[in-house]
Length: 96
Image (cartoon, rainbow, N blue to C red; front, side):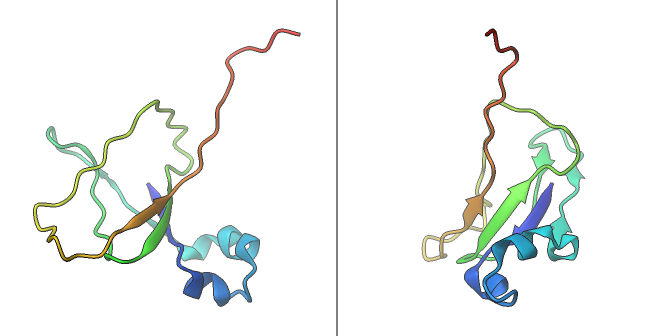
């Protein structure tokens, strides 16, 4: 899974040019797949009160649902974490 810090303060470093910020591959981090039976998937450590853009890179992963679980260390006074991701509705066939 690829992740990108997506708070305004990081985009402002590019004079507000979001496209330039998104295209710079050095801004992205990688979270490796967690090889474990339960739970399995990606297990990133994220800072509360921040916003992240996430995607599954070049894996070609196609899914119809996604589950997110909070850590057992989550406290009620922690700030929210914002996750931003693309959603593309792909059609299998188009008849004209």
